Image (cartoon, rainbow, N blue to C red):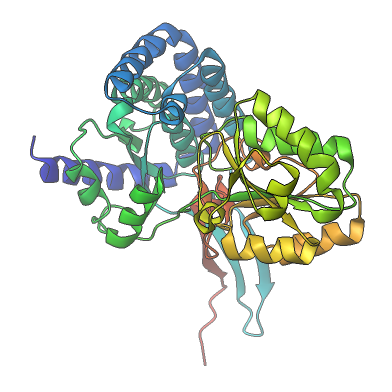
Length: 418
């Protein structure tokens, strides 16, 4: 296969499809999403068989447990794909909405209209359900998309792509509106990120190495996050039960996700009370703890945390633990060592909670809730295209609105400028 010619053809088809999608009505887009959900439901066995092949290949290639976890399409995850499609269909259509129409002294009216970005290239690893999530959000927001999944999920992604095409066809929309790259050749990625004539924005979802490469080499804008170094800070005025439940859930609910806690910060006033009990729970669940000197004084059996540990996204059952002298030190640590992804405080002090929300520089900041909620589905977006830690255009979980832009519109009645 001539990869450059293949990718160019995908780009040309996507650009043509994007013009159709930009004018597609809400009913057509919703019919497509509903038909996709029905197709996935009807093809559960096919999806499971394709995923089983990917899982077997992954084991033979020595993929680690976190990667295999992200790769697996369990029945519950297939249910989640279906529910996500239906949720996106139920969301308001952002396209065409006009806001802030105001008369100017000349008599013209000036406002802003929400419009699609155009063609979105999405590059991701492992998680085949991203194929469905990305397709649904791009479709509902009036965009065309080119999806390039990892080679480890090629069979799963192609099986999902068949269901997506069936949904588009059922609604009378161009099948080229969602194209899943069929080659595993890495040259396809290099071409996709270097086609500004066909692609308007790139969204990379995967490991730090992938995202750094995309950010460095892309010739089109990128919506990204590099790391998910997330923190939970247990304040001196935390509710004990909440603190224990949240700290355990934030780390152990799933290890291989970007919103999993990687560093636990505990106020020195409650460290002696809480850390031994937390350590017992973590030990039962197989989590390795690495602590500062004060932490190790309370938990003498654990490893010493190194400077590198405070800056590491483990994506594994490993947790760095630090005892801090109050909220100010916790915030300073988070802003210095965090990745601006998701950070939480556990406290019953309203004033401290508000200060934490203001001062922590992350895309999601939480009070008395697990960092695992930093997710488009949980935020009511139906699904997410990814989580952005950038500060321009989109920040946090990127849903429908994050895949759109605004243009100025002017209504006149024959006015000319004098």
